[in-house]
Length: 130
Image (tube, rainbow, N blue to C red):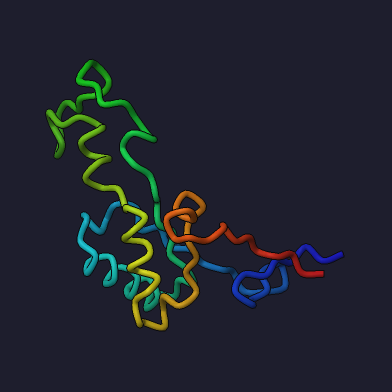
């Protein structure tokens, strides 16, 4: 039995080159064109895929103004965690826009499991090679 896995037709395992996944996180700042540029930059740097975080502020934290939920000092001084996560999240509709883009570098994107319903699809899983 092989320990290899296959993603988008590419074998990954000890005898194969690494499959590099870049993390975009909220670095798109809510700007879809910036997201496209980040994906292109990741591809140019050699990344095989880009991971998008698909959350909403309510799935990560509560909308609360108390201690531990309002930042003190630094770039986001006085801001609440909920506000920051709300601004940085990637809505499911945006992940669909990124995947629908004509760029061949984005052709293999699949809906994150949290967005599958919004995409009208079931989440997909990589298949193990035998």
